[in-house]
Image (cartoon, rainbow, N blue to C red; front, side, top):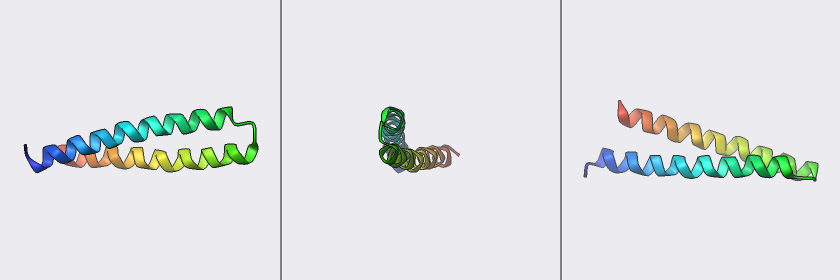
Length: 64
């Protein structure tokens, strides 16, 4: 298995995890009754969204 294939599989798995975590943070933000808690989950969602974007870009680079 090539180094590029290993990295691609790794980043694909990272993307799946980050996407799942993002969805969970978004759901928690929507269901939070406390505005401060909702803000925290919103911030975590934004940060996790950046991780999703990063892994998407890394996968794209490996596929070039």
